[in-house]
Length: 264
Image (cartoon, rainbow, N blue to C red; front, side, top):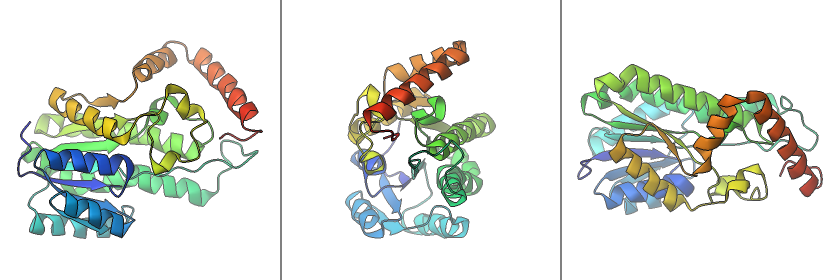
């Protein structure tokens, strides 16, 4: 893949996976616009990656549209769009799957799903003409669910489905789409959750995720997982759903027993 002189937008880029991806692209010669609600963090990453950074609310479609125009003026047409910003909501003690407040559900929907929709709406066709790359960072939780965060699991599943739709609709037009589904990664999002179900597979570094993603660019591999057992678990889930749900219920009991009745 040709990287030199290309332009990328990376959301959620001030830290964690987004920062690692921005740095990996910059190391290949890509100019990066780093976007994050942490404006200072985004600025530092963007400037270090040969571009610029800005504090932008990815749930504000109008703000994103202005961003795209600004990136094109300052750096050039967008060749890589990494829709990486994401949030989760750890369920409170005793909460049921639907008990998280409406505001929490809406926030997860807006960040984890609609931010990618807005980007695709404005960029997918023009990027396809240039053979661009569009990445939706979902999660292994979107494939397998995650104990203790129903809004995160549900919206990440929707993110996977949207990435599939994007690939189906625009793949023949030249847009290369990837759905990134990490399991446990050492990022600020999982701080304090290391004992939860996501940690059972072992935690890897964000730099490892970036390396795996760039390898997937070369392979043109749509589904990008970070742990060997993820595809195996997905296959088992599809083969025997009842067994898989029963196993997750057992795992939930184990996690809660180990954490004094709390999911994490």
